[in-house]
Image (cartoon, rainbow, N blue to C red):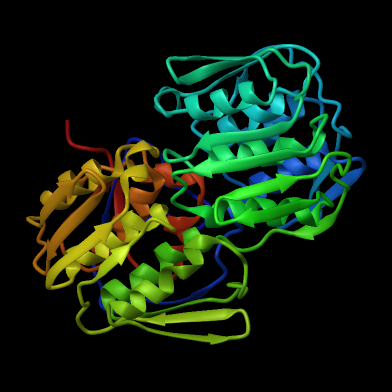
Length: 439
């Protein structure tokens, strides 16, 4: 495997060599979800914020650059990122905003662009252009914005001119990011905003948004499980704040312990971080792992044999990749439910998991909103495709660390949220080699 500081590039294939139980003690990277939410609030705030220990990844770079084009000034500081806010007075960019492959960047900025004084065009890479924004566009129109999309998908053109405010009912069945986007822009509407999110499967991510907004001084009240109200006239204030660890990234590290019967300690896993994926260790316990905490240090120790499970993953749909990969190793049948939303992520994750785990000889029943994984005997050799999806790549690492002959295509896609993933595994002694794929 490449050494520290030399990331695996796109287009390569990474072959891992199982070496028994993985033993790791490390810090997880900062949260992509929190970093991008804090960047938005800081960009709209009055004054200069300091975001300590932010995540430096493809997704956060997309957000940082786009916010710069909207008038915020983001600079590297010895302690993190210094963000000179716009006090809600965004600039009209000189050209299209490029969200790259970042769904949070696209959706959050569609809502923010309504606050600009003139038109804003938002686009991105081909994979992002296939992801839905229609319900968000419809909700923004209810709040007085003039927005056009392409059959419910990007590119999106926002006329700007502000938000009137009011009550809005939103179809959030495809993504909780729609609701988060509305909330983030809401403090700058002319009147209070009430968002009622129908079909919301992962309310924890919206409440995470509300919690970040409150840190910046916004007045946000949760009315019930799927409704929030944001007061007018309470804009964001500059803050000095540290970004929490990424519970989603930590989940992939803990999966290595579960898969190999090893032990992984994440030393910066602050309890009560509010991230839905922080619940993943509870699912690992249900599969036979042991979990312990000492302060911010959270340790997962894997069992000799994983147990299958029946789990509702609606509150943490990003973790279907992690749990399905481990279910392939667990003798018996696992049922992973309430996952229709995962079909609209970086790829159709249910279809991708069924196909790629099938390459290992694992039978997977793919249903409209669930997977049934008949695990216990995955076998190589197999080349697993990542479908340009960082979470598939990291989830497959747990399988490759256990099953001989497993290689992962395009491992460099992890740069979207965890650029140092493979280097962290190498430091823990998980050996492997990168090569070009066979023609």
